[in-house]
Amino acid sequence: MLILVGLGNPGSAYVKNRHNIGFMAVDAIHGHFRFAPWRQKFQAEIAEGSLGGERVLLMKPLTYMNESGRAVAEAARFYKVEPGGIVVFHDELDLPPGKFRVKTGGGHGGHNGLRSITQHMGDAYRRVRLGIGHPGAKELVHGYVLHDFAKADQAWIDPLLAAMADNAELLADGKDATFANRVHLALQPDDGKPARGSKKADAAVKDAEVAPGTKPAAGSAPAAKKDAAEPTSTAAQGPLAAGLAKLFSGRR
Image (cartoon, rainbow, N blue to C red; front, side, top):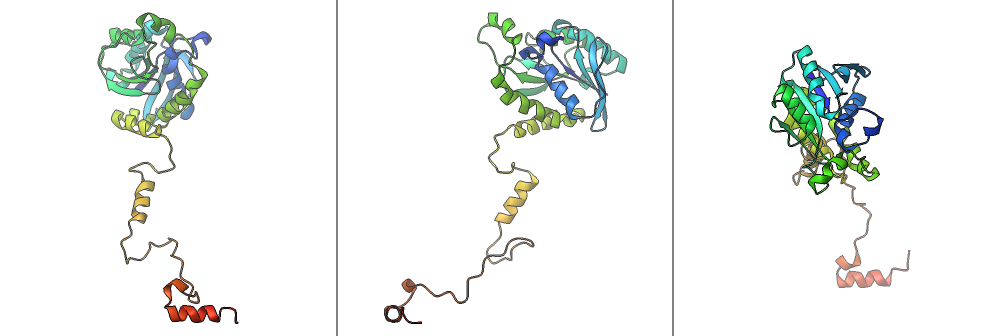
């Protein structure tokens, strides 16, 4: 059993807040896979389903950020899930917007939601830190995190959350490093070239590295044959032949 927790504040007033990007992350996973509808239990909105054959519970605590640990601990006790089976998606001031990190354990870094979970569960749970940037001064943090994302931020929020949903099965399989690598690659600018290490890229390299004198691979386009009746250019002819060609060029 795996519990994926998104941190945020409940209510329509907070839906688009920077502090609610954790809610947005589990909403993206819920929409990408066949999870049951959201319902209320454990002081949270929950939805049950599976990822890669692993049973999964999605959670959005309704206790407000500062008491998130109460909801998470209640669900963990009910399902007998250890901290290593809990993944928390949360906003991270110390990362630039659009950047992310995956880690296990460590401090709460002043994040009230993490502080609450650590108080109830210890600190050995897994985290997906979603960068929102820092306002530049400590006294501005409260207003900053409780303010909505700008419209321009959707240019990085949507691809980031979509890539995380696409690769969420890797979290269920315990492959956090692979998850991070796949999401990172998915967010690279599309230059029209296949990603390094992909089957498509490997095939392209193989096709390009045909040794001289070997036959083209089956199904490849053959080189165009030179027309047997094609005349040679006058530049390649001797001076006598070139003169005769010029003399008789108007005759058929």
